[in-house]
Image (tube, rainbow, N blue to C red):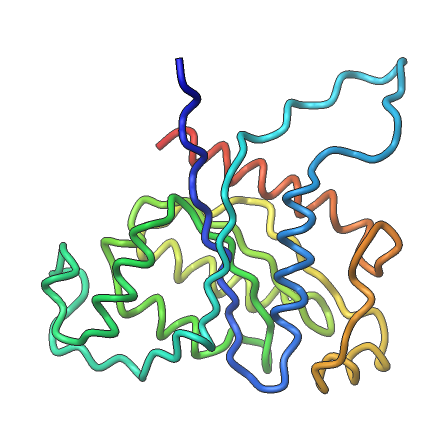
Length: 217
């Protein structure tokens, strides 16, 4: 008997700002998810760890590369149920992309206590393509981006997505780090010695919740 095909998970880069560090942080999130087993030997006296989530294929979706114009469809997305119903070629392409994935990880910066317009615009182009699908939010910023994550959570619920309760918030540890990030410089994120090594467990916990939501669909 053949194994079921692993679900496709879209990792959405929710920033189009230049320069930016969103690709680096998305790579950190992806690496963390793809290395879900602990490198330390198991404690023989500890309770057995929970089983890892089912395998999944992670696919990067960069909203800067998509470069969707400000919403320009003449019809309301909730009234359109197939890509052919859209008027604009870029909307049809975006619809087909979102339809391909079983769930989404939103890698989200916080700007001025809110989330970037580029992600709201991308969400608002569609409705049924999002509806019923699980989502996970990983925010980042000077204080972790929790305000932006809370706002995006409401928006995703508005298009009837199922959002994981755990929302990792990756805080920039210093003013110097903020300055480096603002210039798009390389950040010390990779490996177990990276600045967010303790946050990796929270990212993995959120992904386990996401995959549990996927399995219930």
